Length: 137
Picture 1 (cartoon, rainbow, N blue to C red):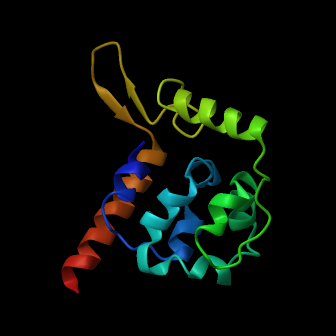
Picture 2 (picture 1 turned 90 degrees about the horizontal axis):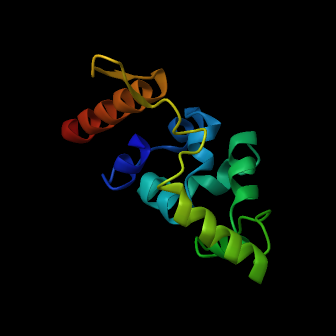
């Protein structure tokens, strides 16, 4: 997924841009990935924690992972042996089994041409914009 490329690119995405992503894209990111994606702006999660997009993402995270951000975000899932095992199993299969957020990102036609979905194009445009802004500063 293209968002994972941005995670490793030190883009320092602002929270409003993050919240403009499709919820399905936001939801597949874990705490370390969001921390890396937002960079110096990660503290703004606390400011926008009441926004629906952030609340849904928080609800999907383990509370212990949210606690590593040290900003008092609450509402994450409790860590139990069963949930930890399920999370580990889910993470292990996410690279082999495409979740709905990844479905259709890139398709190949019968002739072998690659077709990009609007989700991927949105993220590509976002990446180019963020990199351009970084070059200007």
